[in-house]
Length: 109
Image (tube, rainbow, N blue to C red; front, side, top):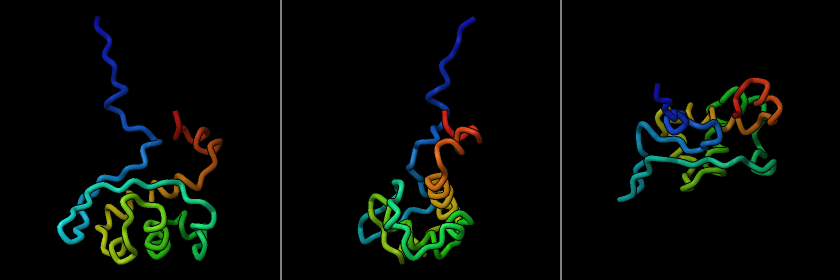
């Protein structure tokens, strides 16, 4: 019996890249993936953490431009496909959880 390595097929929790269903068009440039990084506390100013955890649209639109690469603007974030906004929101909410909470919830390997 041959054992197959399936680790490549499984997405990793630490992968902070979101592939957009609807790419963002900026002039002649098409942005089809966004990489998000964990925000510093100062980058969360003006946003209530509870609203961010609830994936409040206005809060996500404020934070995504601050932590995205390539950098996108607030109007571009506001124009995102709702499915793409939800995918970004899921990544952002996971940033707000402590490692111990993620481990307890089996969110990290």
